[in-house]
Length: 273
Image (cartoon, rainbow, N blue to C red; front, side):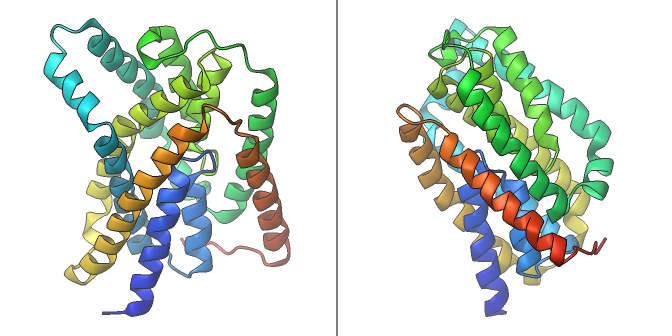
């Protein structure tokens, strides 16, 4: 067993957990950290896809009671029906665009330089939205209309660009449309379940041929790290959003992305694809 590879898997699993549900871009951070760790290539890409399952299962576990009740009462509970319908509406735009643009995005945009630029632009966008977002008119996920869900879904489409952040796009899109911080954040977590399951399973089916039995320990370490870390981050976010703005995450994105752009200016990134 290669201890160095296990350590890299642990680091990347924790990076996935820390960045998936914060508005700082998990894909962007995995690309950047993987590049610095020299963990790249087809196997690394498949690994990064796989550990997303660990992160999303953390959301499923935290909301297990509510998800079970939705499934159990879907045929008679209007709130459960509305939630499922809103998730389908919000899921559709990014799913359609992802199928159409997947090859282009992965070929041309998955590199640290574009991610760094997206981190900076996304940070500026968060600051502007925090300043000019509408007053909250929707306080809970159960009160969302289909138009609110569609707006969040359109916002999620921007996260197809690596470095934008799926959680950041959906939360900020919801706040722009009049959702409270908590409602936007909670709906973002619910929407992550179908979105990430679909994207992960689609990508794994395409990339599974790159794996061998020797990869099982590496993938297991990354999966468990992403799951356990995800539990902590989701709980942190649910407690944080009620009393704080997202400005600190915006400034982190701007500073981190700016430093990366400066670094890659003097150390040009060379594609390995």
